[in-house]
Figure 1 (spheres, rainbow, N blue to C red):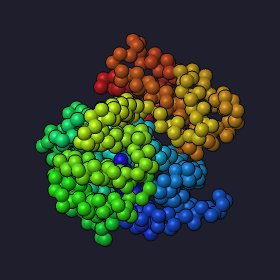
Figure 2 (figure 1 turned 90 degrees about the horizontal axis):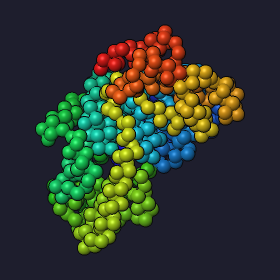
Figure 3 (figure 1 turned 45 degrees about the horizontal axis):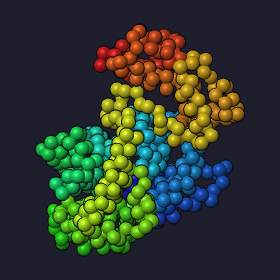
Figure 4 (figure 1 turned 90 degrees about the vertical axis):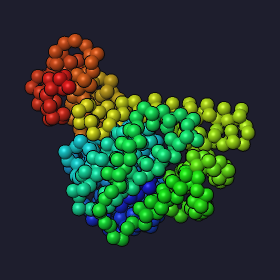
Amino acid sequence: MFSTIYFALLSGLAQKNRLPTYATAMLDGASERAYCLVDDVLERPAHKLVEADDARLVAVADASLLLGYEQDAEEMYRRAQKMNVGDDNRLRVLSCRNAGWQLMMRDRYGATAKCFARIVHDDAASPADVLEALIASALVHHQVGRQRDADDSLLQAAELADMHEEPGWRLVIALLAHEFDVQLRIRTATTLSDHAFWSSAHLARAQSAGDRADITRKLTETTMLMSPMPALLAQRHEYLERLAMLARGERIAVAPLVELVSHPKHFRGAGQAFLAKIDIVLASIAGGLDDVADTVLAKISRAEADTGTRRCNFDYLYSVSKLAVWRGNPTEALKLYANYASEALRCLRCETQGLGATQSAASRALPADDISARLTVKYRRAYRYIVENLDRADLNTREIASQIDVTERALQLAFKRSIGMSPHALIRKLRLESIRNDLLNDERMQGSIFDTASRWGLKSRSALAKGYRREFNESPSETIQR
């Protein structure tokens, strides 16, 4: 997926005021240089870190993640979050943001979407936090074929960006809208009609051609100016233009694109050169240039092929099966296509379950699967115990701590550092979300609202009324009337 391109752009924009030289390097696509500009923070012991260093820790973690150093990134994110212990609001947003990008790089789209949706509807999130979360949500929805939801997230982001003083946000939104348009035109081309994942997603979820054109026009038409134009933005736009030409069968676009992936100075880390090759293969097939597709596919190394068979990367599996047909190997093609179909179906089942549109998340409870990813391995056991015993009114922090053999204080600190809330606050939040899910379910058990709350361990009517309105900005009875 091309999400790392936008992660670099968003990381640069988010740090533009606090770390201008780092931001410039990121916006130019120089992630290695960006890393070197902030890696001095790694040499400082914890007791010598100052308040401004949390931004440097997040920045060096972002650059590490882009360069493929996932373990280093996780450690730096945790150090940054530890610096914000005591500021629950900032810690909560930072935890969701950092975990969201880590999960996206692992192709765990369902949990990624939940992390960023929480930011969008968190009153403590800044406009920049929300903009980043909305754009990331659009990336996730697109990747799992939910283009209508992806467009809705981008439209919401564009409205917010138009009021923001930083023009870069609006330019990134315009670029991503163009990206979606090009990628969709390639993957739903007539010559790729057997690309079952994208064909079914297009038929089931996409707008009519006129609607999509109107949305793309709204998102790409902008009067925002940014001088100088970030190199990464300009490079990606040029790349997309050539990709679109190739999809139209214009051979003139072949040489520049092949040159680009042969010397991938702009595709470093996280398999970006590999993903660019798959883009070119699919665009070539869409344009009827199967010989070009075969030539580019042959440039994929064994190591890249191993990356290509990881979870949810069905574009690679499809490309291999499609070109096996072109080479005259129908038996092999059938076997490869079966692998592709199986992986596409697995991804849909695993990653889209419970995945909802970002703009409507405020009107439904969000499943909390992402919380596990934000906790350390040891404390995931505590979270699992909470979920399994959520319906017990007497569930308390002391009992949870004893289950993993830590003190109450250690449990509280670990939860605060990782997710920005105490175990008690998490229990309350999970109960309210579960109650809301039941109230929104047409097949829920009969009984009063308080009966539903009691089944989830909430025995106080006043706590239900106050907590529910604070969490969802409406009463339980208003939820039922939806």
